[in-house]
Image (cartoon, rainbow, N blue to C red; front, side):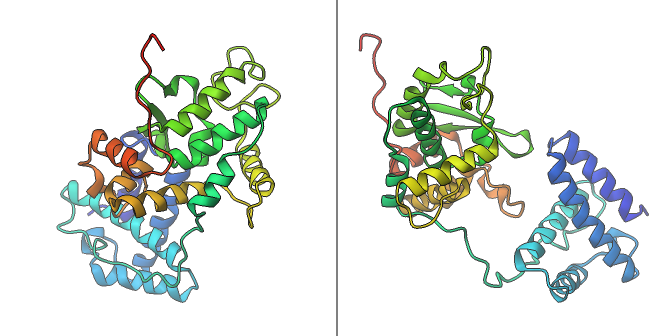
Length: 305
């Protein structure tokens, strides 16, 4: 019999070296699983092979009694599911005791979205100076590709493929995915790149740079989104995740294809990721082109254009 702490330590090492998860994600796993082990120890369970669904339900109930909200409890359950899936693959347990355990939403609210008209008002900002072009390209990418803040901030010029209409994005856990680049976002990016050299330091590879020439920080990107939401007359300040969520909502409303939307977003929801692994990029691109309001791509220009 192996001690639960040893099982968790091995699991975390595998996540670090095989899945290449970030230290922040690993720390979150560690906190959740240490808490589970402590709870099981109080129940007299020192072998994870002895854990059953009732143990996991009791843990979730104990978390609820401590005042944790549904989102926090669901995250803990997700961590437990992944650990037990690992042990199941290794042949150390016969079934996953956390697989079917869920917690009610408890009134959890989805992030607010902007309707299509308000998004259009926000992204179509006026001005032809370098900063206006830069910010317009950022807003078009947030909404047109559903990017996370960190993903947009880490974009490099080499990640843009205008010839094929593609965008290479590095997301959570250093995972890379390829997304279709819609015509609106591509046009805004081309417009920005024409003047980017006026600001960028020599050799700087970041797509979005500040007045000082270096990569634009997360805080500055957030500030620019808030700035333009005020300037464009939105009733509440917008933020990057709101544009990402609007991307998902509008695409889902138009297409009804939940799996494609989840794949495009590269959601890290541990309990549902597996159902999206069989989608190929061609299907995703077709769904994007057909459904997203700013994704209509023009035919490629010939060399003679």
